Length: 293
Image 1: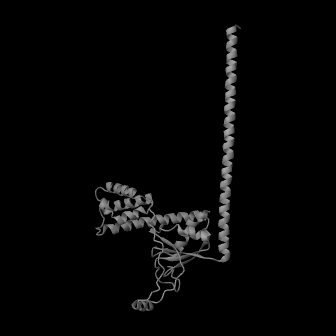
Image 2: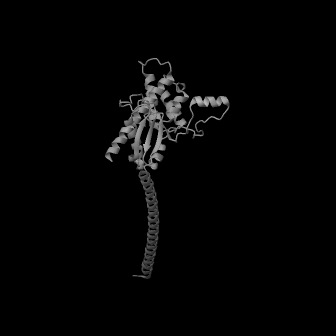
Image 3: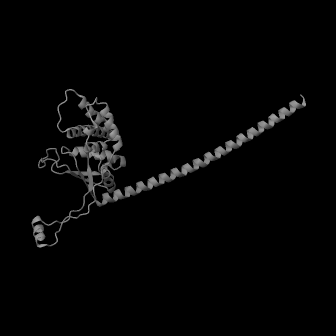
């Protein structure tokens, strides 16, 4: 073995040692970073768990206090379809509140005018609004978020029930008004009804309508969709909005279709029908999930 070969073997050994040392340093550095990251993640996870536990404890305390005191929280539900029954409202509320852990806190449901079940003394027609009692403040607070959401194809109104203030009879108020005295009227300054919750943006509604008109072979025009119909389509999810527009297109392309005088009202009826069918399908799905749980 000559000198050149010895030098070459020594250099290769030194190079191998350096590479081994660098690899070891990189490995220790990576392990150290992983350990630090794991420790930080564990701490964050612990903090989140503690925060969630404190929140649940506070909710349980408030719910238990409400139940001990026997307090009832009543909400007003309006703008409901006239063929609504009590058995339609209860599953809808429970399906929405079960996700928040307070589905069992729905109390009595009082239908204005009648319950639609033919109960003796309650055969009158339902007036379109109802009063629902909740046993906890949490359930009432979560139910308030259902304001302007779709119930059987219609945007429902949810408001808190305020204590009734005394109001004098009309004859007394009329006499006082003629005499120029102050009249005891109802309290004013109630919160204004917020705008309806838009699930499909106006631009997306225009795109859906344009697509339906293009595929209608010239039988459907964008001018057939008035502002009222467009605003109602915006209250529906995107898939339901597309389904309703396609249903209108199918009607216009049908050769055996009947003549319609008021297209806006007729198309609105089609959209309401599709919306109601989708709501019933969703309610059935939620009830099945509730049974499985």
